[in-house]
Image 1 (cartoon, protein in one colour):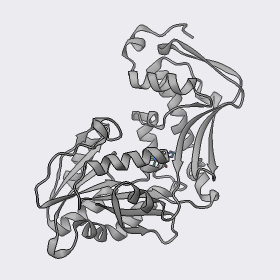
Image 2 (cartoon, protein in one colour):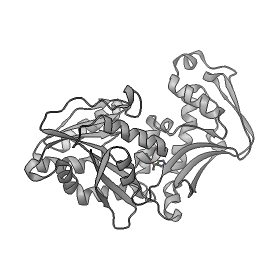
Image 3 (cartoon, rainbow, N blue to C red):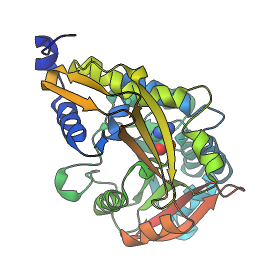
Image 4 (cartoon, rainbow, N blue to C red):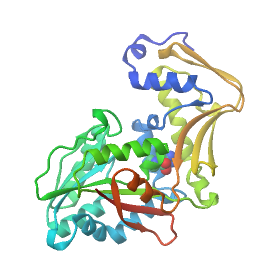
Amino acid sequence: MSAAASPAVAQQFDRRVGAAVREGLAARPKRLPAWLFYDEAGSRLFDAITELPEYYLTRTERGILAAHAAAMIAQAAGDERLRARLRIVELGAGSADKTRLLLKAATDLQETVLYEPVDVSASALDEAKERIKREIAGVTVTPRVMDYTHGDGGRLHLGPVDCRERRLVLYIGSSIGNFEPQQAQQLLRRVRAGLETGDSFLLGVDLVKEDSILLPAYDDAAGVTAAFNRNLLLRLNRELDAEFDPHAFAHRAVWNPTESRIEMHLMSCAAQRVRVGALDLTMSFAAGESIHTENSYKYKPGQAEALLAETGFRSEATWTDTRGWFAVCLGRAE
Ligand code: AVI
């Protein structure tokens, strides 16, 4: 165990990661922000989560898109006589897997479509671009590497469109669920401020259901979600010269009905002290003390539509699965 950070790590660590860890571990209760999950290993683990039998979200949303993509695209494009050409933006596109269904529906309607995936990860965008170019004729992909959650004076900068075009912004995958209610509102306001009246916004939300369904989705039998949660500590070891023993922390998923959210925690199995070399910090953990690593909000029926209405969109349509587990809502910028 080294007493100080190795010079290489101390000089090179990402300041945003360092600041988030310093702030989160000084808070009571201790917390770490969920965006820290998504380094290369974490993104791979998340892809594996989406394939798990217990993680119904991806599969359910994909089913809704498969059944209704044509209706979603037609609704966004508007009345047949005044129909606009759509240009599709996707926030947090990642691997853009389910988006293919919407892109295919768009090319069925208007033959060609411009697709602008937005993500902080350039490598995820490059992969998505190559795959979509290969698989769907008629799609031109222009990726944008951008943190759509921050900066630029409260407005998402998407650039000009042709006067006969309308933007359709996709925010699917229940990504909005990882934002606190107030942050979710702020994000939608940012998006609205970057759109013109008549543009539209497609939002995917996970709905409240029995905890017997919710909890296994975040605590699966194969332990993939536990590995995803613990990878956060491994990331701090790699990037901040920290000395966490990930197996000295247990993965916990808790349903909080008052806040309508699944919480993920890493619970210290024993009293321990852990050095974070690059921050020149030693943290103490009591036995049973937890680090709160994620909230995943589950929406009540009508709540996503209310959020759209509060943030400058007219809620026009909602599509859901037969079990009512997941909803995809279309809002029109007013
Ligand atoms: C990315 N996000 C929508 C996932 C969720 O369900 O909240 C992240 C996740 N956390 C644990 N499993 C999946």
